Amino acid sequence: MEIEEWVRGILRCPVTGTELVDDVGPDGLPELRNTAPDRPLAYPVRDGVPVLLADEAREVSA
Image (cartoon, rainbow, N blue to C red; front, side, top):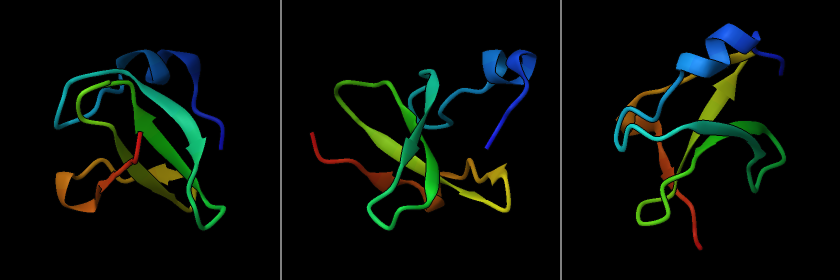
């Protein structure tokens, strides 16, 4: 997944407001993970589109 730099700069976690970084989920699919140390969440990326809905987030184990 490639997100343009200017878009990457404004994307934030809708729950914590922290920056989002590229990651890969346990199923091997791309996702965006927030950088909140106290509430790590990951959001799926479907067909190249980040799904930034709180209901779609999964908790990431530390």
